[in-house]
Length: 197
Image 1: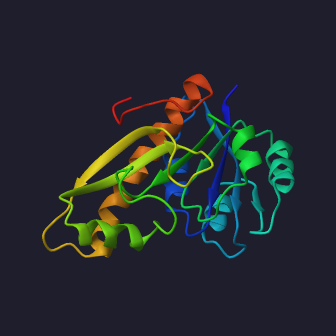
Image 2: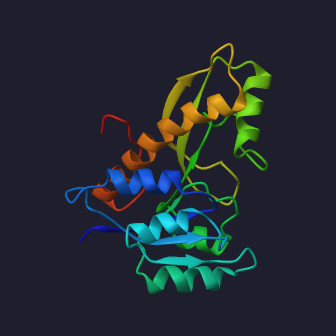
């Protein structure tokens, strides 16, 4: 049985598209649902282009609303891929060990409330970091605080802008997230992995 995955998005869905394009028939993964908190998220069109069912779960949704949607699609594993809302604690508890997030920095640095999008890359540049990258981590009730499962690094260049750095980090996110999902498919749970796995 393939691992039945739901991907949660808030924006254009580039990580979703990278995941869908990278998965093959022998990977043991089936993306069975894409959830967004925004009805106008571009990633919903990406899902439709790949014949993946979609659901909009409003920012006001309760844990019961979430769980009804996930259970209706028999979801085994949840991936946050640019999802900019906090998942209800009861959902995290139900999917503990089966819920991951991809973050555009090398956690534990540059994580927490407000650390998303260009805010992260501005913080990296403001601190003068020599490298940045992306992290896949297990999701807990605290923002960006779960166990680190895998990371990929990129150098920070002297002439970097937040936008230029963001583009290079996104490129490694597009490799890191599929590797994390493939690793999880082998055990049914979030596990440490490398890009070579």
